[in-house]
Image (tube, rainbow, N blue to C red):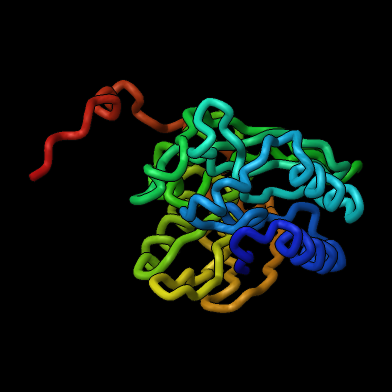
Length: 269
């Protein structure tokens, strides 16, 4: 779906409607797009709405999760006290009881984002309780362009992620890349990947949607393109088994041959 630019109250109201719909459909965890709470924009007026994760907007997300009994991952502009004009492009991970479980800050900024945001530098996986009769799901988060870098998803998988949640604001002409990255990161890491992309048309850019939940066995539940839609899927242990079992590619890596991965990129002309 899309979010109103600089309209957090309206965006939270929209989120509440979708969370209620998701809960009725049996969902335990709902993922929203990049910067959803305040709206994705590089406009300084929108960036100025960034808040601390202990502020009222994050608290409102917690209240929403608690009332619906559903965990939430949602894009959020996080205030950066060291550079007030450069917030973090972040995502909140909120438990079904409303507790803030974790915060992820986008590490791989895209194009003009370098002049608007401060990049994060850490990856983490958090245990998110979903139902009393089941163990918590280990959720790793990356944001939009992060999914284009295989190393990001691999680090989350190495940290034990069962699910990688990807709030996104991807735009044309990158439909093929988003679809390929969504499926590839799931297959090559033996994990589920759920990507929620923005749907919005603006004068100079079109955010195309294409949200989906990819399984490591190659199946995909897709929301389609160019329209808001709620898509629900079940994380299946069978899909992990069919792809070779948990950590298949992690266990068969030849790490002794990977030293070059840490070398600086060559100079391209």
